[in-house]
Structures are given as structure tokens and as C-alpha cells.
Image (cartoon, rainbow, N blue to C red; front, top):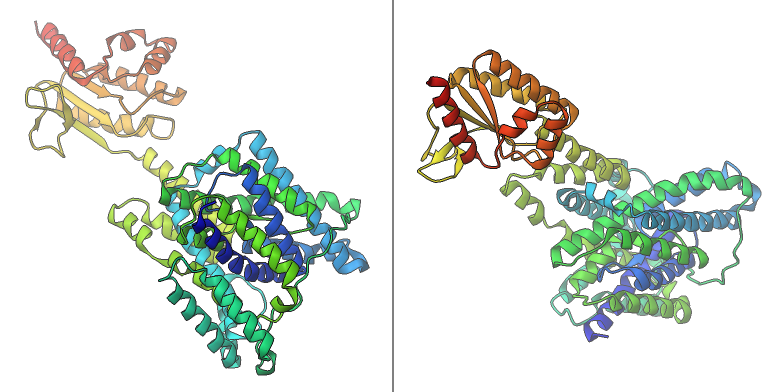
Amino acid sequence: MPRRDLLTGLGLAGLLLPEAVAYAGMAGLAPGRAIAAAVAGALAYAVVGRSRYAVIAPTSSSAAILGAALIGLSAEGLGDKGLSQGGAAATALVVMTGVIFAALGAFRLGSLAGFISRPVLRGFAMGLAITIIVRQLPHLLGISVPGAPMWRLLGEIAMALPRTNWPSLLLGLGALAALLALRRAPHWPGSLMVIGGGLLLGWWLDPAAWGVALVGEVALTWPDFALPPFALLPRLAQIAAPIALILFAESWGTMRSLALQNGDRLDANRELSALGLANLAAGLAQGMPVGAGFSAANANASAGAQSRWAAIMAALALLGLALFAAPAIGRIPEPILAAVVIAALTHALHPGPIRRLFQIRRDGWVAVAAAVGVLALGVLNGMLAAIALSIAMLLYDLAHPSISTLGQVGDSHDYVDIARHDDARAPANIALFRPNAPLFFANAESVLNLIAARAAASGAPVVVLSLEESNDLDATAIDALGEFVLDRAQHGQRVLLARAHDRVRDVLVAAGMAQLAQDSTFSVADAVARAGASWQDSAI
């Protein structure tokens, strides 16, 4: 095991601890359940998963959904059994989430991840970082605000600012400054050192006397494998599906973005199976739903983790803290834990990746929409909205493609867009056009109508249509192409197809346009030569 991974793992334990306490509170469960889930999930993922940066533990989004679900279920059938029954429902949800992931991996549905583009991932990462930081601000300020969507939460925080506990704020800012300063010494486990300082402060002094909130009791309990009422199982299955979806979006977004940054390769199907195993293990440990947490994974990458050993060591160190230092952990001031989480996410706020999208004029607003969507709509709905926007923009571009008029470069066989190349010249008596997108049902008629208008204006007796962008044609495109050929023939123009793929030729023959398929060519130069010969024959 590399020494860097050992030190990184120790530092990660200092981050996982405050996150576990915070996320257990969001879900309305004991901190020990979150710690058990982080330990079991991380160790189980290491068996199957392949991301060297992913740290499998409870996440903020899944904890929020779980907490809301348990509150709703308490009104639907948990009755008077309260927390014990709620814990059983939580366990059932975790197991069901694991089963869903395992099924998705078994049926190889990881290709669904392909609908999440890289700009969406970049915007998602920034939006999620801002979300987690904002949710840590009340702990940093020493104020209590009700849980709410992001924009309402900001209003609640603003209204509560006059109640700021200044010792909490100073303590949190001091811890944050120390963490940022320790980044200059990457070989030191900064977060663990700051947590250790918090342990000493909470043990020797009395922060509570200054109004500073403490973590409180942290203890692991032996699993009791309690089951919820059978009547609740169908309702739990309905809740498990969105939990699995949001964990998939958050986990794959985290894994994939870090893999892209560091040149790693991941198999979405394998990662789905690994997340399934991790959640099943977390369920058996009576824990919470787990996924690749954004803050821990980014902290892992920033510390220079070289393998999955870093996450394994983090899980073992967290287990050791829970078993042997639980009383001391309970006296750690909450502002210090909040500072650890915030420090792990500060580098994710760098606008460089999104600024680059605007510089290359590609999908910058999609990334911005993903970030704003996560902030305004929540993690799951924000991700889905950004994906829908990127797909809508793709469909719009495909439905409104540009059309190039081609010309020959000198005496070569190269034919390029005349509008972009001043040295390209159109051959005499031949009109050359190329749709810059595949022809399909959404664009075939409009594109061919525009080409027909340009062909009519050219007055050329032969029209060459380059189909290099179309690997195949659907029924609408075939009908539109047949109507285009017939229309041009009625106006005295012959149509030849260039760069026609074999599948296009096959479907033309099947559609009764064998002559058009036979006259088509594999290059624009051959089509021009054939068009020239055809025009000369007709002129004679």
C-alpha cells in the first residue's frame, strides 16, 4: 500500500466523521448508523468498484430524501413505534436501493450514464459543492434554521444572522483557515489534525458554555435486523427508486468527472454493481444509503490518492474512531466539523472548467443550467433538468443543421465548404450540397426543401447531394429524398448522391430507388466526374 494512500486515508477519516454526523441528523437517525454505512459501504465497494477516488458513504442528497421519507412514513403507518420502526424502514430502503443498483448492473443499463454529458457533470459538480457548503453554514454560524430548499434556506440563514454565535463563527473560521494553510503540506493529514485539535478543545475546555454546539453521542450498535411492517414494503419500494436514481446521478457524476480529470477509465455497469453491493452491505450494517460522496471523493483526489487503498484506510480509521474514541468525538465542536466539509469543497468552486466551455463556444450554458438547476431544484431534479436541456439542444441542432455548398480545392479531390475556404471553386453546371447533420424524420423535409430552393437558384442541370453525415435513413428521410429527386427531375435537374454509405444504398434499393442507389458514389470527386459526363451526354 502506497504511503500516500495511508496518509490520505487518515485525512479522509477526519472528513467522513463530520459528514456522517451531519447526514445522520438530516435523515433523523443516530450518527452511528451513518458511520456503520460509511465503513461497510466503502469496504464493499473496494471489492468490485474501480474508481480510485470514490469514497462510498452517506451523501447529503440521499440523506435529505431519506429524512423526508421517514417523516412521511411516520404518518402512513409507523404508528407509535417511533424511531425503532423508522430505523427498520430506513434499513429496508437501503437494501432495496442495493437491489435496484444490482439489477441495473446485471441488465447492463450503465449506458444510461451516457445521457449525462461532460458539461452537465461540470455544472453538477459546482452546483452540488455550493449546495453542501450552504447547508454547512448554520453549523459554522452557530444558528438553527429549518431544513428547506436552497433559496429558502438562504433566506432563513439571512434572517438568522443576528443570532450568530460569535464563538462558533470564530472557531469555525479558525479551523477553516488552518485547513487551507495545511494544503501547502500535502503529506500531512490536515483534516485529521484539525479534528484532533477539536477533540482536545472539546475535552479540556467547555465550548458548550459559550453556546458552541457539540456533536453529541456517537456510538455504533450491533445490528438487530428489525423489519418494518409488511404493509409498508410497497411504499418503501416507491421511495427506494428515487433514492437509487439520485445516488446514481450523484455518484456517477462524481466518479466520471474525477476520472476525466485524471485520465482514468470506468465501466458504468461495473460501478452500478459495486454501488449495489455497497448498499446491500450498508443495509446489513443497519446503515443509510451510500454513494460516491462529492466532497470526500474530491478531497481524496486533491490529496493525491493512488489507489482504492486510500478509501479502505479511511473506512478502517473511521471504524477505529467510532469504537475507541466515541466519547471524545461527542465533544467535538460542530463548527470545526463544518469547516472540514467546507474546506474539502472550496477547490470545486473554481470556474475554470466552465469558463473553458465558453471559450470554445460549446455547451457553456448547459453547464451553467446544471449548476443553477441543482441549486434551484435540488440534486435530482436539477440533474434531470440539465440532461433534458442538453438533449433538447442536441435535437434542435439536428433539426436545424447548416447546409454547405461545396467547391473543389485546386485540382485536388478535396471538396470543401465554399463559405469557409476562399480557394474552393464550384464546378461548372454542377450544384454541390452537403447537409451537416444526419437526415432523419425531424429534419429531412426542411433540409431537402432548402437544398431544392438553392438548387433551383443555381440553374445547374445536375445536383450532387453529399450524404456523408447520414449512416442510415429512416422512413421519413427516404420518402423526403424520393420526393426531392422527383421534384428536381420535374424541373430538369438530375440528382446524384455522393458519399452514400452501404446501409443507405441498401435501404434505397429496398424502397424501390435502385437506380438512385446504383448511380451513387463513395466520394464527391467521383460524383462530380459522373455528373460532368452525364451533363455532356445530355448536351449532345
